[in-house]
Length: 121
Image (cartoon, rainbow, N blue to C red; front, side, top):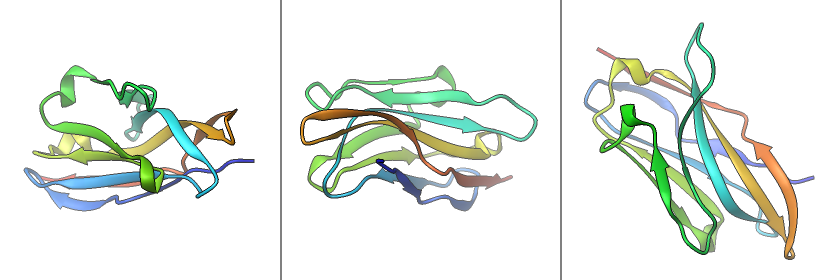
């Protein structure tokens, strides 16, 4: 059973920055990953994603393009979501959904526990 741990959420003023992390254990690796968010009373939405570790292509929803950046550190089995120029409408619980490999085997997709991001105006 793989697991994925998120960290990095918090409270920030509008215009500020936060970096979220999503990591797995030393014996596992993250292949593709998507970041989602869910604001109160709204459905969970896809924020962006990064493709396989071989290509590292990224994509983003229009509302965060130019402000958010997804990157990875393969040595540390971590994928980051750098969020700049934050807006109050970015307030949500952020989740990562990662495709996990171990020993060359695809273990499937796993969700992180979620981390709260609150942007004050």
